[in-house]
Each structure stands twice: as structure tokens, then as C-alpha cells.
Length: 559
Image (tube, rainbow, N blue to C red; front, side):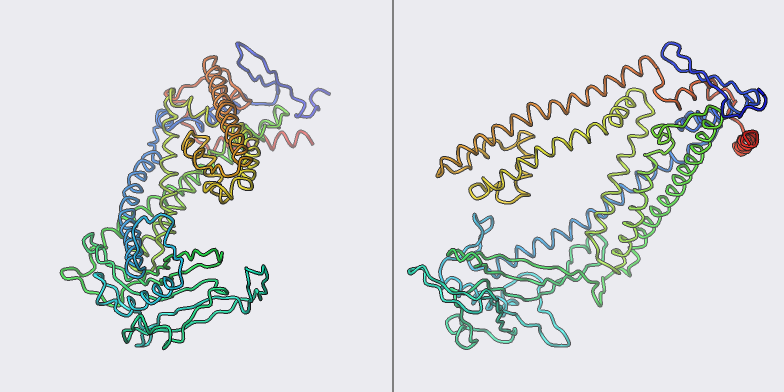
């Protein structure tokens, strides 16, 4: 009867000695060498690159590749960042130029924006825009030109939006309005100069300010960014679609004037830079190709490591279930999935995509600067975050990394609870204080203002900017701000710090006692072989076959 008992009833003992678990196998048909080989494989899998080199003499190629990749990606990001900075600066400077050219009396950093109050000011500004556009070549010091389509200049459009019909009499407190909106546009071509005093009549242009919602002036200008030549890059051709808006939606007596533009970057049709034939791009293209190759190699190696970890997890789970009749916990299973490798895989994918876009930008096939900067910036951030993994090989750094990993779930749960209180204050501040305080005018401004207050920034200015014309609202604002600051700074932040501190003390206590905290660590701890012992010079494939054969044998005996 004893020989016919199923293998699954094989028992194990879990003995505790000085806080350490010891697994003892009691299976008459089990070869102890198989168990020791599995322990050795698991211990080797969780070694750092230096220990693996001592155990099997394999050079840490992934480690060396990651160090090389950090240098390459950082250099690539710096190169692209300088180019992107020139592009963004050029766009911003041209926007500032448009404001000075087309807004009458515009001044930099004007408080309250550019605001008009009289009908004469509105007409004068519209006339000023039209004349500045027509006389652009005589005014600007830049390389601005009109857009041509099929040999014809594109016109400047003056479009007004207004209610279809209305009869408004504030004196009698009566009004009639048709909320449907009509749009009326006139086109002006840059072929002749116009006189300010006679513009409205010949162009049949007039405004009904009682019905007027907005006046939008549209025109398109072209220019070339020549400063890139000094940095051995071919200049791009820019198309600025400019819109000047006179906003009268509020009908409050203030018409706000704003200038906006939509930029399109194209490859110039015909170019010739003296002394160059475009070969200056070859070193950069070769460098970007080397980055793609390094990231692709790193991607393959990390994917292979992740797959090997999943396979080893499957073997360990099957072994544990067959010989100990135990199910491996989810936390132990996740130990085989290296999160740092997942981070590197995502980083490599983003870097390859960003480098491909950079090559397209460099060769003028595309101008996706924003997409490329997001991909390369995120990838570089992940690469440098991944450096923490290698700092974890040192004991004093490792405790900090373990603290971050162990505290992360509790931190997320704590933040979810604190977010409920935070959102409550956000909605309350937006509804009550929004009409009276600039920092609470919109919901996104409220979240930014409260986050600044949590960090102790700009407290006094937030208190002082609250007007005192309404005593009840003023008093509510004081209670609101004092309660929020006291709650989040003295309680929420203190609890947050205490949560991380408690995790740090727990990890430090476990390290001092050197007590395994999981079944997996207890099982591996039974292996006493040091990396220099030479016991790790084995064939993994033969061990896997041996284990699988033992599993199959056990399954046949069960049946």
C-alpha cells in the first residue's frame, strides 16, 4: 500500500532555525541531485552580473551594452535637443514679431493683454493690420514673404462672426436675439496700399457691435530658418498660418486681441549651401543608426532574459506542486519577471521609434519634432532610471531600492485615499472662489494652486489676492485655505513620510536578521554553493530535460 500511494502525498517539513526556513524533501523516488540542481539554477538566475561572471565566466554583455547605450542615447538626446531648441525659439520669435508688426501700440509683457474699449480703436487696429500686411516687405527686417498657390497670392481674410438677428435695449431691460451665428468675410490681396480713413467704405466693411461676437483676421506668411546652417543642418521652410482674434463674446466693453499661429515645417524645394553637398548629414545618420542597432540588440537580450525567467518560473511552479503539493504564491512568481528588463524593453522600443523619426527629420522627409522629442525624452528618462538597478548591486544602495519597491503598493493606496480629499477641495475652491480669485478660475488652475500650497509655495500671495469686497466669501476663503494647508501639510504629508519610514525600518530589520521572507527565498537559501565553487558549470538544457523527465515519471505514478 505504501508503494502505491500517489506522489502528491509526499510531505515536506518546514523547520525554523533562527528565523530561517528549511525545506526538507521526503520522497522515496526523488533524486536529491535534481533538487540541488534546481536550487543552483534558481540561485544563478537571481545573481548579479559580477556573481554570474564568477560562477560561469560569462562576460556581462548586457551590463556593458546598457552602459554604452546610456552614453549613446544621452549624446543623441543632446544633439536633437539643440536642434529642437532652435526650432522652438525660431517659432516663438516669429510670433513675437507678428505681434509687434500687426498689433498697433503693442508692448511686451503688457498687463491684462491687449484690450480695446472703443469702436474707433477696433477699426484702427483692423486697418493697421491690413496696411501692415500689404506693406510687409517695406516694414519687416526678417525673411517673410507672402504665400503663393498656382502663381496667385493667398489673400488676407477679415471675417466677423455675429448673431443673425437681435434687438437689444438695456435701458428698458428688453432684448430679442437669434442665437444662430453668421459669418461674413472679405478678402484683401497684397497688391495695393489702402488709406486708413477710406478703408471701411470701399471694402464694404462695417461692424454691428451689439451683435458682434468676434473678428478674425487670417493670413499666411512664409520664411526660412537660416540659423541651422551654422550647426551643419539644412534649413527648413516654415509656413505660418496667422490668426488675429478680436474677442467680443462677453459683450462687456472689453475686446481682447490675441495673435496665434499654426506652423507647418516643410523641406525647402530647392537649396544650395555653398561648400557642402549634404554629406554633413552622414555622420549623424550613422550615429542614429548605431543607436538603433544598440537598442535593438539590448531589446533582443532583455526579451530573451524575460522569456527565460518565465520558463524557469514554470519549472519551479511545476516542481513545487509535484513534490511539495504547494502552490507558489503570486509574489514569488513575480520575482521571476524582472521589472527592470521590462523598463529597458519599453525604453528601447521608444528609442528605436524616436531615432527613426529623428532620421526622417534629419533627411527632411518629415518634421515631427514634438513626437520625436516626446519619444526620445521619455526613453532617456527610463534609461537613466534603469541605472538604479545597477546601484542595487551595492548593499547600501540596495536597501533604498528595496524600500521604494516595498512601499510602492502602500503609497499608491494612500495616494488614492488622499486624492479623494484633494479633489473635494478642488471642486469646492473652483465653485466658491473661482469667480473672485485668478488662481481658482478654472479647475486645472485650482489643482495647480493647491499642489503648490501643499509644497509650501506661494502661500502669502494666494491669501493676499483674495478680494475683500464680499465678507462672506472672504471669510470662507480663509477657512478653506487654513483647513487645506493644515490638513495636507501637517497630517497627510506626515503620514506619507511615516509610511515610507516604516517600510525602510522593516526592510532594514529583515536585512539585519537575514531572514528569508518568501518560499522562493527559503528554497534557494538551502543552496550553499558560492559563485567561485565551480558547481555552476553545468548544462542547463540537460537539467531541464532531467527535471521534465522526473515530472513525467511522477505523473505516471499518480495514475
